[in-house]
Amino acid sequence: MTDWTQVHSTYYLARTTITADRVQPNTFYLYDTNSGVYRTTDGGVSWTKMHNGQVGAWTYWNAKIEAVPGSAGELYFTSGPLGSDQTILDALPLMHSKDGGATWQSLDNVKVATFGYGAPAAAGGPATVYIVGFVNGNYGIWYSADSAKSWTKIGEHPMGSLDTIKTISGDMDKFGLVYVGFGGSGFAYLDFSGSAPAPTSPPPPPPPPAPVTPPPSQLGVIASALDDVGTAANVGSGSVVNDSTPTLSGTLSAALGSGQKLSILRDGQLIGQVTPVSTSWSFTDPGASDGKHDYVVRVVDALGQSGTASSAFSLTIDTVAPNQAVSVTAAGTSGALSSARTMSLASTSSGTLVSGTVAGTLGADEVLVVFRDGVRLGTATVSNGSWSYNDGVTSGTFKYTAQVQDAAGNLGQMSSALAVTLGINIIEGTNRNDVLIGTSGMDQLSAAGTSTRLGRGTIDTLTGGAGNDLFVLGDVRGRYYDDGSARSSGTSDFARITDFSSGDKLQLKGSAKDYLQGWINNLQGFSGTGIYHDSNGNGVLDSRDELIALVQNHGPIDLGGFLFV
Image (cartoon, rainbow, N blue to C red; front, side):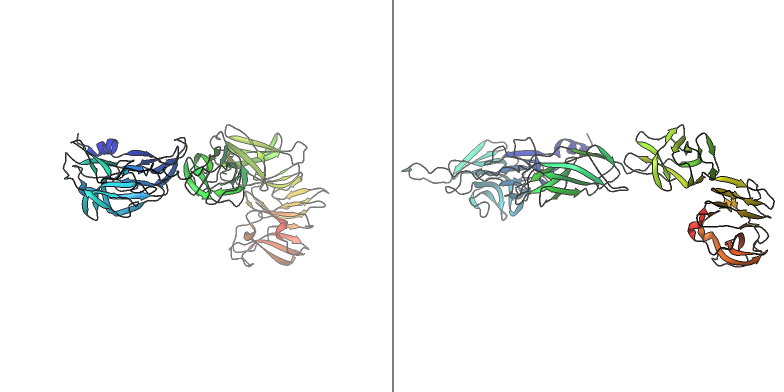
């Protein structure tokens, strides 16, 4: 075999070791080289990560973690000897933790191949720590009776490839009695305790075990999530949202105690902690990817002990907007459609049928939404690339738009607007000079009518009469009464509007910035406000701007008097 990298990564570069707490029941500590130190307080039913990543260097080769007898949450750790001959020359520092593996102190002056524990030097004292290694660069077999603060050398042993000391342990009943085991030549023991007189009275009882702190008892609940992208809404578990940073909210069965925090986990990984001042809490996810995610909360105390996790709260995050192009192509009374971009339709009790097209197929979670003047009406019926929606209105002037929306609330591109005037009498002219007179109701007066000339070369007179009237001076086809000449003001073709009043509107092609107003005095015997196309776009009325209409005996018209298409 030539690919040694694969051999190492597959079979050797991963180690897991476990030890039991010698004081707290059902408490174990596990070290995994790929992720870190974990603790369970319920016999392995659930685990809490205490330390992220490797405790010491080179633990892929060797790792040993052992709890200290008689001391809750106290641990020692070593990566042991390194090198192909497993010599002590490559020993790594001894690591020490007093908080269940959450934090570690490196004893840099102490480098060990292996370690073990024995009886304390004095009753009630800490367990004796035995090592094989170096203290301040001096090799030997050492012990510490004061929690690694000081060390005493008790012997040496020549180290070679066949007699490397693999393990060391002290007698847990007698201080000074220590055993070592070799890699290839058996074991040995040393008794450095000396002789002692026979006890005259029974030995004192062992110290009571350290008190065991129970894990947190509070139960957390995730009640809702706030999706504040687009229209803000609180949603329940199982919802689809387009917010990658939803804000979770919920309650606790009781207030937190000193040192306790509420942990929030997404898909089993801790994403944050909060400290509620009461039994209500909220937390904003720092950012999740698209897809389904499960959230739980649980209370954690200062020792790292976790309470019971909440029920899972599921969210599916979808931030991708639909890409189907939508158009509004027609609107009219049911069964009678018109395809002009601006339409005028007779009033009917059957409502207004709005229709159009959509490119592509809607997904299972997508709908086509119809708007009137920017207000959502509802969802359309879609079939084979076409759609329709029956609006209940029968009269008025509106603009219809539409777009695709998915279940998460993502919106596709909005369509162009279709302007519609409903419930109005339509009065049209010819390609000659026309006089159009409206009725007592709502009228639409268009002297250009269906003529392709669009009023060029004609002077038309428009009288709306009573009611709210629409004077058409342009449509999707273009501006009316524009002779296209930049050399004249166009006084040879225009519309004269005789009775413009409040509620009436002037329909023009383009937008407000395309037009200017100016007083006209005695044009063919009539005076009033002139409506001009700003032909050169300079925003100043001059001789080259094109006259579109003369609004007889009327001052400047405010923006509300115009309808632009």
